[in-house]
Image 1 (spheres, rainbow, N blue to C red):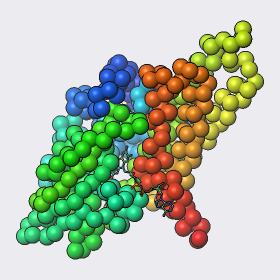
Image 2 (image 1 turned 180 degrees about the vertical axis):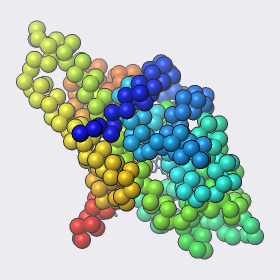
Image 3 (image 1 turned 90 degrees about the vertical axis):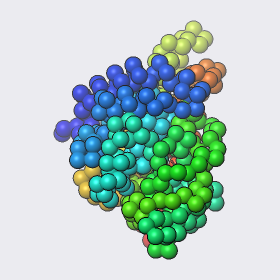
Length: 365
Ligand SMILES: Cc1cc2nc3c(=O)[nH]c(=O)nc-3n(C[C@H](O)[C@H](O)[C@H](O)COP(=O)(O)OP(=O)(O)OC[C@H]3O[C@@H](n4cnc5c(N)ncnc54)[C@H](O)[C@@H]3O)c2cc1C
């Protein structure tokens, strides 16, 4: 059986990029609270930002599986899920614009973003709630050729740096997605993890958005959630794999009571359980991604994939910190960062509970 995820050349390219351009700087970006714009340009030069986007819109071609390989390889080479969130926010900000097929919007927003010149974000969540997407309150009132947008968006990834926001609004015709500029960053939010990924509160006060910037309704919004959830699921098992690798190296080296930790049955069984959970998560997520890439519209399986990977990641990062002892609790120890970064996975892109609601509906209850 051929391995659709082997892609040795792509993996090699991403590994070298990560080791050279990311790993030496990641601690500094974690302290700065954001990644520099220059990183977007360098990633674009290598073609990494355009992977998974068609050449007709300025992308590099490739599909969801190529994007998955990039995510896996960045994290497993010493990057992090926070770095992925910051550098690849366009993965959630652009697809609706691309799907709209609007040439002007593609030229104005998609191409420059894939060249690393612009930064976009996806603004759905509001202070009153994120899970209930249909309940958003930001309004867009039609006024001639424009909409006038008013409201607040909260927890927006890359919002502090964003040049534009693909924004969910309520219009007289129902929920729409508008590509908006001219909003204000009212707060940059401090978080438990994902420190290198800026997260913002955005305010829209009488922001005028041309009606031509309408890139879809509620259906399009929900349709693109599958790719975001799968990406988060990949970040989960890749983070878990990285933590397993780091822990394996550590338990071979670390001696207690005159013997390596790796020689203790308790430790060995913990490692075996970590490896089992990583492998089950990876296998199921990749299988689901292959089905999505081949054109199937999966919602329940994607929800199951996300919850499976989140549970594996939560378990493995916790065990990795425990097996590292005091070192595992120290800032600047890589497993400590992954432990903090991992906590968002069951919250972002639809919480574990909301994924279970999707699964339960499919069960008919
Ligand atoms: C670091 C970070 C980055 C983010 N990036 C973005 C972004 O780029 N764009 C964006 O739009 N949003 C973003 N979000 C927001 C994220 O998607 C929301 O936080 C998430 O969807 C949950 O919404 P909420 O925080 O309003 O929680 P709520 O919806 O208020 O839920 C609170 C709790 O109640 C549970 N709950 C809710 N409804 C039910 C129910 N019916 N049954 C059982 N339990 C329920 C939830 O699972 C959760 O545990 C980000 C959040 C964070 C923290």
